[in-house]
Image (cartoon, rainbow, N blue to C red; front, side, top):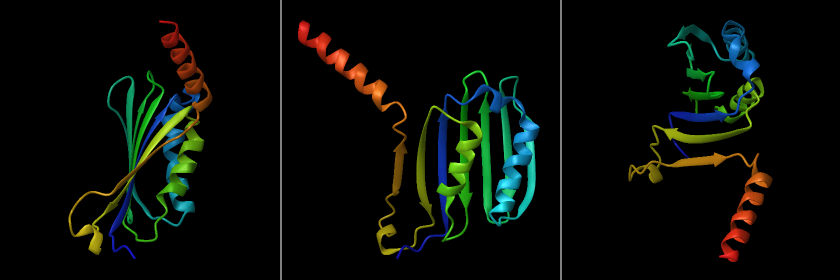
Length: 153
């Protein structure tokens, strides 16, 4: 069994619905409520416009933190979820965050933080990255076209 202090999940959400990126105040309330519904204690929340296209939301939890950066012109969201509990399930919360933004595709990276198990003794980072196959059909079609074009030459 792993002996870790925290679970850390990062996510890149691409092609988010534009309407979901505009109402930051509503977003702040929705995300804070989401954490409270899952039994986390929200200690503080701050929403800050970094510039006209970039907004940052930081939620400090007793059990960790959640940071999100919204880039409206790019329809892109970068999220960072750190939970200081062995049994935490950041993937479940991320799924609900994805439901808020409705991205066309996403990439997640999962880290075990404070790994004190035997496998962590060598200090090599253990990461697991997942890219959603939302565009698999489109990408397969593009590969077939490239393959056929290459064969003609």
